Amino acid sequence: MIPPKPAARPGKVSLWRYLRLFRQDILSAQPARLYHAWMAEFRTPFFRSFMINQPELVKKVLKQRPDDFPKSNRIAEGLRPLLGNSVFLTNGETWKRQRRIIDPAFEGGRLKDSFGAMRQAAEAMVERLHGQVGKPIEIEAATSHVAADVIFRTLFSIPIEHEIAAKVFARFRDYQRSQPILNLAAFIPMPGWMPRFFKGSTKRDAAEIRKLITQLTVDRMQAIRDGTAPDDLATKIMTTSDPKTGERFDTDEMVDQVAIFFLAGHETSASALAWTLYLMATNTDWQDRVAVEAEALEERSFAVMSKLQLSRDVFREALRLYPPVPMMVRQASCPEQFRDREVPIGSQIVISPWHLHRHDRLWDNPDGFDPGRWGTENGKKCQREAYIPFSAGARVCPGAGFAMVEGPLILSMLLRHYRVEVVEGRDPVPVAHLTVRSKNGIWLKLNRRPR
Ligand code: HEM
Figure (cartoon, protein in one colour):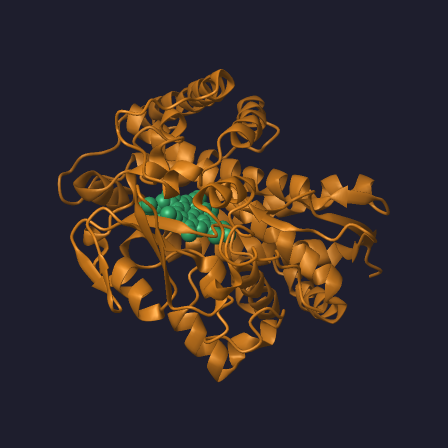
């Protein structure tokens, strides 16, 4: 069975039609040849963009010369009201300083410290789903809930039921509906003088979220001063000094970072987990194998993660087929030559994990679900050269290690208790706005697994 893949758009279309298709869904707006081409140029009277699909070019942009290909300013268009000066939006020296403070909190040793909180969130999800057994449920709502719970528990040592956490979660949902992270403006340069319009509700939601997060951050600053702060990610980040300048984040800058941890860390994991569960429902042999392996969860310590190998391979395969961040945009800051083409300064460079992960000249069985591939020669080579669900290089996702513990842990915990089944007539259709989601949700049925 080939997992759902959006139909590609037929042949050539006019710019205006492309823009219309793009607004509906950035995946089905693209032609099928992108699964085979090494590079594609999109030329209009106003701007030029290049989608690069060749591993050497992706390596050049992300790993070898990231400073020459900064994040496109346009990605920030819709996000400033919420994210301010967060690490997701900054470039240059500011960005480097922010990463020097943030990165230590996500290093291997610290992940172990976050494990207990992640496990509690996973167990709370199993509890919550008890009442939903036997009837169709929209699983993205449940994975969103658990991913938000993980972020609050690991960052601020509070569960999602906490009054402020629950409010932030609800407001984010509204905000995301009105303001996708990957907006059209990110791909289409608009002159600086052109006014940007935000819906009143978008601005209001952003302001309310920031007010709530500020409250959490101010309280934490005080607790750090009083010596009563719990040893979690927020305390770690707020007490880390930049090794170069000795500076720490002040409250405002920390609020910006908390907003992005929440946005980047919960929507992505939620999407990945929902697709993984759908793939389990359609590949019951793999589901049963992961469930057997999950008995290892008897052991409560972090060491259990080394025993959840199948779960990890399954989650990794879901990230290949449905990378939550389907495309990333950079900007050429100097004239370049890619393959035999001139790339003028200011061109938009689009890197598409979606297309790279399904490229038919690189992957064996590119559209098939096969977690066993990671043990094959082709799978290992492609994992090194053509697999970037977390991006790569200096700007790689700082939460990658965190997500690769959280995802397999929650997957195993769920399958240990429940069997997931598809709901007839409700096959998901992948579309990309903020992250790769399903057009009408991902519907599954849960049954208790006999033990
Ligand atoms: C399955 C889960 C996740 C996926 C697939 C994912 C993917 C990504 C990708 C592709 C980027 C680069 C975006 C770009 O360059 O345009 C990114 C950046 C980022 N992610 Fe994640 N992420 C995940 C989970 C997390 C978590 C759990 C956190 C934090 C708790 C996090 C925090 C961030 C931050 C702060 C950035 C900005 C980094 C920078 O620009 O220097 N992510 N993520």
